[in-house]
Image (cartoon, rainbow, N blue to C red):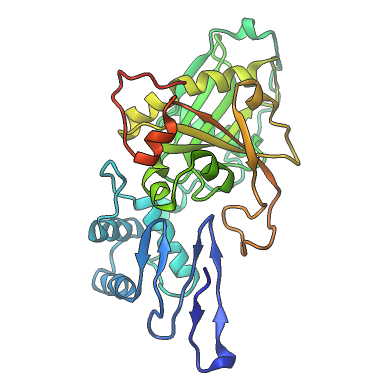
Length: 336
């Protein structure tokens, strides 16, 4: 959906497109010409006027405070009542990128905590002992839920920054796991986060409408990072870790965020990986992406590699639950 921007005449008209698995259109020439949708929210001139007035009236507000006030004003919440402040912050950044707002400067304490693709914070160790064993010899595995500020979280971040080809990026609700051997040796890291806003293969697999997706997407999560540390050579470890992870995933998510998840997805870069471990762990291949990426400049132009889309349902009635955007009690069976 591209929306025309009125300038000074026909020759000055332009089109801007923004894509992050959904498309946004902006129109401006002193006033918003049209509304656009962002994750189910309709944004128009009145909303922009309120944002500008709020920033002028409260120059001391941080970006986080502005996002939370925006959520409160719009009652922009998840189906479980939590403020969608990460979505609001993302929206504010997009508005600024298109010249519609000028946000307050990013505060220094938050600059140092942005989980972006960054260089490792410490020099690499001089030597790392290789771990070359049978799977039985490293069991039982130790599963560490890496909570905010913990030593385990610091180690997960460091491993991903240093050894994962995508580095580290964490936005919104997420779970991080540090998997260790029975002797407390680090073996692997897992990161689960927000699902892609749109994925044709996944949306067709679920069979939901755009309105149902807007309500139920918070109950789908994405395995955004999976790393077996480069010095670990344990046959069968990758598929075993993936199989074990899904058995506890919904309960851990419920414990942290107060709502369950019914489906987990992942995108495997076919130029780099075959997805063998996922398939061995019973993940289901359902299609491919179109190479647009989460922030591609135009849906008609390939901007990143094609990725294989794999999913794993966490409940036998996952489709009904996602379409209804409702949860179940902890006593009901989850894994199909």
